[in-house]
Length: 93
Image (cartoon, rainbow, N blue to C red; front, side, top):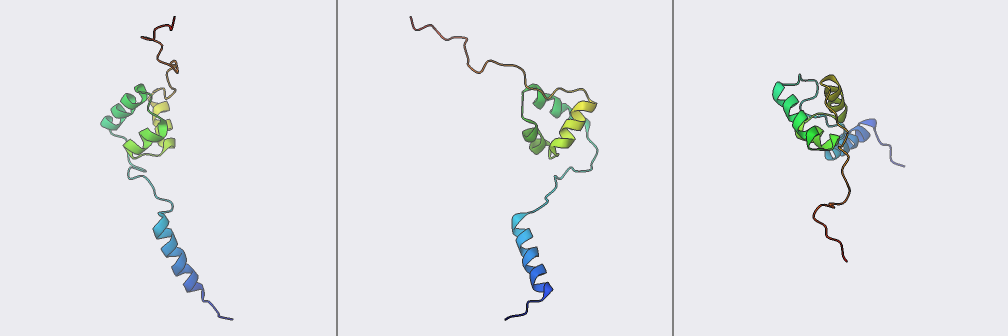
């Protein structure tokens, strides 16, 4: 039976974590919001962009997006839209 040292496990674990990019944080984490970022948040929210997509575009976590939207009173709820484009559809009769 081969005896394996703890350092062997630690080395393998470190290589595994490097390959998986575990616990990667957004580049903007912990930084103050700029006026430009807040404006972009408003624009993306108006276009019904999903919160996760906004987070990716602004390099912020979804939690940060929700917090800033609440602070600035920006609604992230999608506008009710018909699932079908009924304008311009003609009846089949």
